[in-house]
Image 1: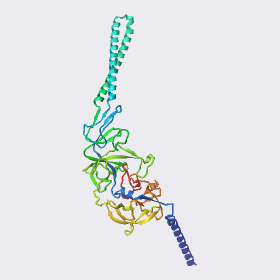
Image 2 (image 1 turned 180 degrees about the vertical axis):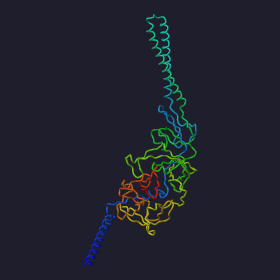
Image 3 (image 1 turned 90 degrees about the vertical axis):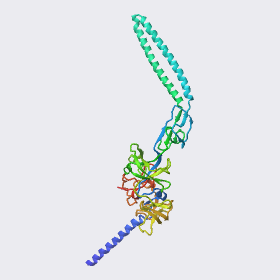
Image 4 (image 1 turned 30 degrees about the vertical axis):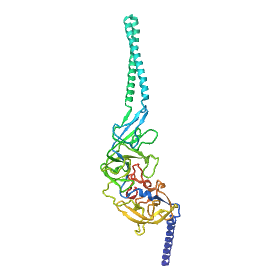
Length: 447
């Protein structure tokens, strides 16, 4: 009996285990199957992943080439410009005439001011004559009239003082008008290139110049690079750090330099935290300018936009001018002989697509895709949860409570919070807002 009873218990356990396994299979595999609309795979454009650059090893900061010095002149708001003698891009020497004022109105005002001054002088003479008469009459007047004369004399003296002040003010106006007429030409204070002309009718002011200045001139000579860094990343930079300046057009074209100044006293406010924008003041951060002195500026142009990379001491010797180069974390290479990516099939669903890998760059953790992908495709970062047929959505639509995990995937549990010491990259890129363009380990870390 015991043997039969024991066998029955074992049978029940086996059946229960089988039912449990079937239930797990149904919930996990059927519940998370590609046909389910409950799960979404967030994909990113291959072209954007390529533009991100060497995200595996080096942080990048947005920068622009500028001169070491600028000179600006403001326009007299009370005057009219008669002749603007320069245009944006012109090369000028110190002392060259930039523009002239219309002095016809000044001359009319000067003529009237001279007439007014003559009238005031005549009035002052009359007041002085009257004062002299009152003083003479007071000496001859009876004692009972002395007090009345004293009051009249004092009033006359006050009128004389006021008239003298009026004359001084009018003379000051005349001197200023004469100065404006004589100095109707405004000249350049330095040798340089006209960077902006703010005539109030067209947006000719270049970023970084005084928006109130009428004309701004960039000094000719050595160039430097101005970058911006977010407050979350400013601790990554120090003055004296060697950097590499990389062209945005040709990533193989580089220049060397070092950070000479991090300007923490001139912050601007940014409401983007690196993942998304929000009106919440808790997401507000500041960005700061920093400056790079170049070893050589040959080949650089004023106003050229570049990337700034802290020098790791390793040179990128791999030519990436041809083909598709993306981070190795984007490709599932669990089976080295059959690498694949999770790609959008063009109809809003995920598919497992085999790719052919060419060269690799161990320094930047990038791989070259020879076949299977185009720049127009969109792919998801493999994290072990993707399945064929899952819905896809652009990375920009990822909910704010969805964050990248350390395995370069993303966690939809909603319980993780972004570590503020590491900034992610929205849509894989960053503009000129000072956000780090590269991301460590191919993804943002979480707490």
